View 1: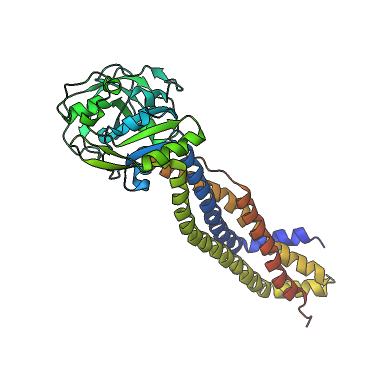
View 2: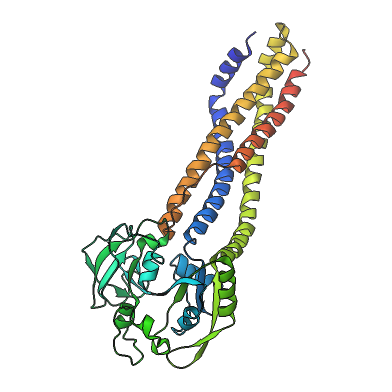
Length: 405
């Protein structure tokens, strides 16, 4: 007797029940694998977004807030860093380049960032995708996904929430586009930091400086502060020396008050954030694993029920001369067809859920994310398949050992 022929007939009779079980198992497995892919995707993409920021200098406070506001352009409360902090950096030879950053305004939905040429070009190591670096106070360089084009004039508004806050009178003409980085900076609009000071009328009594002329004058104490300073060290040893130097230093602001400084490695702060993420993901992973086990138990129970419902047919096969092994094969293959279908659909569905998560998170954060099926997901799929094979033995053995009456 052909096992596959009987199995095909049985699948046709119980098609709806078997499909429902396969769907339940696939859904549980899809969630389980999507969680792992999403976690790995978030870690790798966020780490890549922080690559161009080796060291961040700011006023002493929350390390996490400094990281999120600078690297990911999130709305975080950070204290102003005195401009005189640049004196410490300029006096150290281990600094390859440094650039101040000033946040707080927007151009529609794009954050407006005040900075210098050093940051635009990353110390002359980066070429623009189109155009050139700003040369006057009313020019801007836009991110490739900011929706702006070269030659377009934009007017920023006060505040970091789009549509809220008064508009500034001074406009900026876009003269360059940054290359795509896959980070929130692809949406940003970068302007001379002097323009940010001018819009907020913060000059500390100084005459309006020319573009970046204040960098060579050395009168940082009278200038407004920055949100942060991005620093590129010459070597790893220089990076540790810079952090040690600035973490125990202070600088005077424009009002003559002393402000304690801090310097952070973006990688170290990310590791701390990842540790918090791992703690949260453990709960999700246990939930997902429980869902898969419950789904397998449902398949097992249904196997027993189907076995009892089809028991007269199996006994009839036995009376016709079919061996016990034949009946056991039919039951085992019937259950395994459900498990195998659920695993295949679940693996594909998990990748699909991770893709949806990548789109949603990417739109919210501006970070380019790409999920991938890794060894961990393959292990989960194989483990589910193996457990399903073991579970399928119980109803198969029970039906196969049924006595003829």
